[in-house]
Length: 450
Image (cartoon, rainbow, N blue to C red; front, side, top):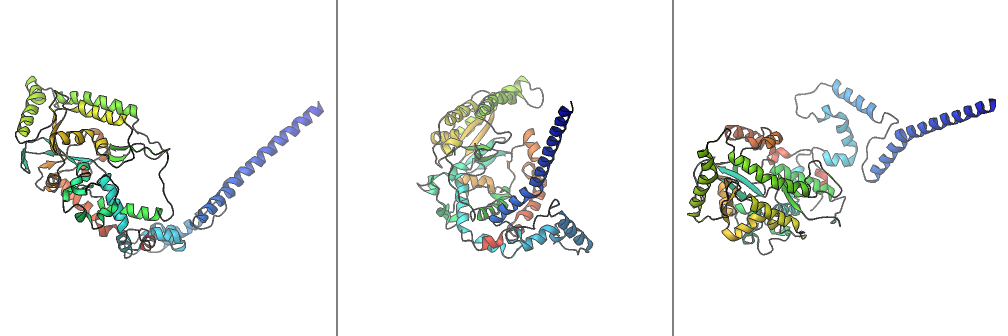
């Protein structure tokens, strides 16, 4: 009995000792080994910083700097960086890499960005081949004259951005090649002064307010990345441009998955449910429509609009009762998605197959039907310019659907009239070029020629 009891005590003691050693090892690994490994790894890549202090790291230094900054009176100045984040401001002065990336140098910043002429050409050519939005919709608020056409009220104008960007008339026979040098003389020279031929961010009063910010951000990010990294095409890359709110790769980065991404099954389900939604929408009129109203909506108005446009030489696929051309558009999309796509920049027939096919049959401007809603598809650069630069307020933005309203809220995209004018004026001031002289990699950009 005594021997068995002694053995049990030895085993228990051994287990306790093992657990204690394992705990010590885990603590050692967490508070010393891992921090030092990370610090050495980052230092080997040029990323330095204050040395790691056992257990508490740099929290004591940060706390002391914060207390010191708070103890000093703050003058009436907008230079609040050293006051609000005193530790970041101080460390930036000491460690070169961080300082060069984030230091506020307003006089050097514009010169550095203006030197990136080749990068500007590359960005413009990328935006030409792959614009953020492939088409921009507008609604006629009343009967309007568009060029030589008389367009009735409540017709949706679908202004194609992709069509003039891929038009050989403006860009030459090598339109589908990636040639940044075509922008070497500027956008005006590249388009032969056809303003509507290059509109990746729109045109006129409603030009994308974040255009300057987006291009500046891209130049800064790329100038930093390309100095330390090189890129090659992944063997697993699948060329599949895809339009969903904005233009993007359908499969995104290889190995990354994002919630809400559409699989082919979801895409098929969405296209079939589109017809059902159009049928429901055709009969919904925010109330219970009468038989006359239904007849007027699904037959009389579409036929009248179709005849009016045909009399002016605007043709298109014939209107189908209730569905319009939704079935044909859906079938063309499915057919294109079923075929493998070559690694080519000729994406117009892939992204907008119906517009590509029907412009060849009916001309550059034609009439199609989204359910009972007439859509005048505009691909001529001159008409695109006329629609975008109009200041009379006759070309309205379509109203947001409830789900889109949740995304955009009451921001600029959802506003019209005086509210839009007031908000846009404020946004223009914030996003103009001289207002974007923010903390950015001036020393890195300044000494780089790309």
